[in-house]
Image (cartoon, rainbow, N blue to C red; front, side, top):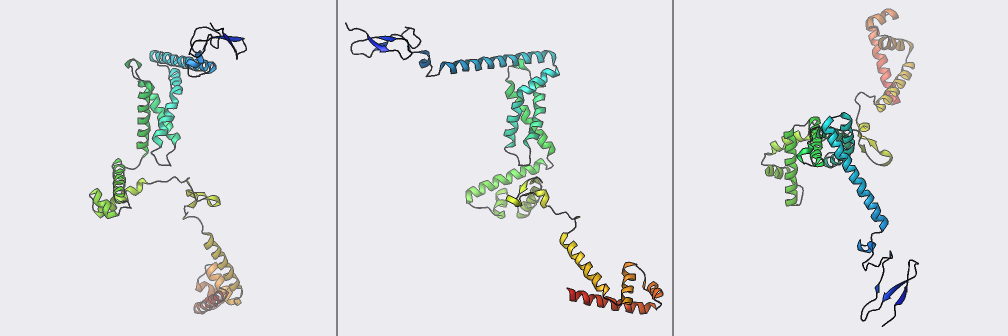
Length: 316
């Protein structure tokens, strides 16, 4: 009979006694915990999960069970009293559902639609779902609430949409027809080919395009350009009431040249121009001021205008 062979204990607790068996590997007589039960250690049986992680997982599960029990109790209390404070607590608990549904709905919408607006609409759907939910029917609230939240968001989007639903439907038909044609032709489809696919005439297709133009919108605060030239779209829109800086500069320069030309006129011509254009006197009134006839004033005015025109042409 073979004597037991001592094996060093890596835990620092002495030596393990291993019984040598004929034609077989030695079998440890005790596990890492020191128990001689003949089975693998607990951490090995759980596929190498450390005991600390296992304890943490158990703690998380207990907390989750506690939260679930608290929500069940909250639903029971709300069903009995229909108190607004209890409803608000339920809204806070299920608020992440609104953000999730709003994010899913927002992925298929234009960029100018703000997700925060969708969340605001979804909150009303969540409140409505809480008010109308009946736990005794055995349904899961999350599934019911997600449908109500999505419906509230879509209803609000339809209420804000100024485009008729029939036009939206035709727009989707055109998009699908373009996808089918381009997949089949492997190129951009012409208007004639698209009209044939939609079973429309070219005039009807162009009229449809005119209706679909109002479905394309862009936010005025969207940025365009790149680098130092980047600006919002609103900053690039022309203002018809604003003063044209180029025209204003040309006008000031013309006024300066005209004033200099008037100064170079003779005294009588300068008086005629001043009284006629700046004082708004008639030719007869100017004749009385100068002591000449109206016809003579007309001749002086014509001569002054010709001289001014010549001086301005030379200056230009």
